[in-house]
Every structure is written in structure tokens, then in C-alpha cells.
Length: 108
Image (cartoon, rainbow, N blue to C red; front, side):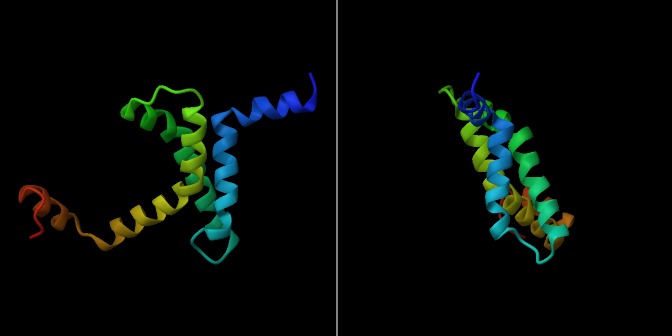
């Protein structure tokens, strides 16, 4: 087995795709210091590893390499998604969320 065969096998692995996506998005990761960027990288990787298969199942996608593609995209975008979720949690009170749910989606 040559190195090119190893590279092809690695390229089809969803975990490797998630790592590559997360590494590529470090340039635009929120935060100034490397500690914050590293946590963002880990969040993007976690979205890729744990979220890709669930999203594919929920969407009913059946084509080949779908998990690898979604793992790459979640790695690429997952850290920003985590930042937005964190911002939402920090700026929204639980009472507002409950009131919105009770009102059928209309803001109180």
C-alpha cells in the first residue's frame, strides 16, 4: 500500500474531514488568543464527529460520502455555530423563551 492509498482512505474518513474543516476555519475563529481559538476548534470538531451522522439521518440523505461532506462542513462552520448558540444563551433569558413557547412562537 502506498502513501497515496493511505491519503485516499483518510480523505474518506469523516473524522479527518471534520479536523480539516475545523483547521481551515481557525483563521476566522472568534476570539483573539489561541486558547479561545483552540476551544473553538474543539467545538467545531465535536460538531463534525457527533453531529454529521445525526444530521444525515434526520435529513434522509443516502448518497455516498455524505457523512464526510457534512463532517467537513460542520467542522468548518461548527465553531461559529457554537459561538452563536453561546451568544444566544447569554443574551436570552429562560423566561423569554418560555413566554415565546407559550405564545405559539410570538414574542411577548
